[in-house]
Image 1 (tube, rainbow, N blue to C red):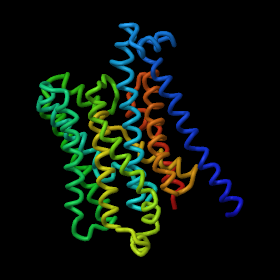
Image 2: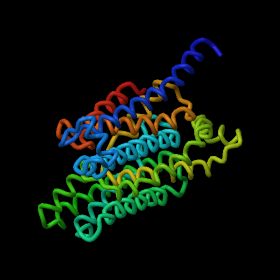
Image 3: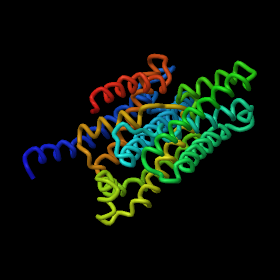
Image 4: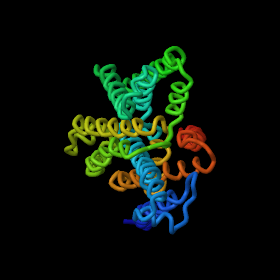
Amino acid sequence: MNAAAVTAHRRARAVLPAVLLLLAGLAVVALFVGDVPLSPAKVWAGLTRSDAAATDIIWGLRLPRLLIAMAVGAALSASGLVMQAYFRNHLASPDLLGVSSGGTAGAVVAIGAGWTTGSLLVLPAMAVLGALAATGAVLLLARRGAGTERLLLAGVALNALLGAVTGFVLSNFTVSYARNAQILFWLLGGLDDRTWEHVAMAAPILVAAGLLWPLGRPMDLLSLGADEAQSLGVDVRGLRRRLLGLATVMTALATAVAGTVGFVGLVVPHVLRLLVGPEHRRLVPLSLAGGAAFVLACDLFGHVAGLRVGIVTALVGGPFFLWLLRRTP
């Protein structure tokens, strides 16, 4: 191993502890920051349930929001990493398959039809169903000769169609200001008023992340090309199916509990790849931790600046995407 490789290896080993330390620091800060700032003594009193008001703030508001932010960031970042390995394109993101648009369309239909008034779980459930249906539609459209180009084109077309569905419901079926406001807030993405029910809805992300972790080495081989991976003993079709399924579930659940939060799956994996190189055995855990830290940081900034987290991630991700386009041959 040459000196450059040794340096890169040492740097890669140092990045994960640094990201985890950053995530822990942001999580601590999130307990203090809010509409009602809390002192360290009040935070501790809330965590230990020794103060009723502080307990309501910590356990009723901030911990659910904190956990949802971390889960959403981890899910979207890991999904972006999977998509980039699947398509062998570092510009890929979960949005390419229409998963986020499908989740948004499902939520908008539920709100516009008034189904969300009966139960809080209807909204995230419809978002999950919409996201899964969108992915199924893309796969159905691309089933004949499902090459990368055909799959990408199907995703682009479905994104446009689902965007039209969302606009149609918003402009024709919502009859009250409250429903219109709820749809607009969902489209912007946010973590306001998250509850432990939302945390339970996002809990399967942990299962998906655990299933994704051992696939780092096969993803490295897949990045070499389907033929090369097949010759090295990888079941390419089965691997792609598992990767796509895990990415779909994670993105669907993230959309279900937070609405449209864009660019996480593009920004975080790409930055981490620049830091530690292309090995997915390192990138999978780093993407999970880095995505959680990124969304949590964006939410904290947005909370202070009065912006929803979806707006903050777009303000960061939009220019980043343009920079990538400029430097990509």
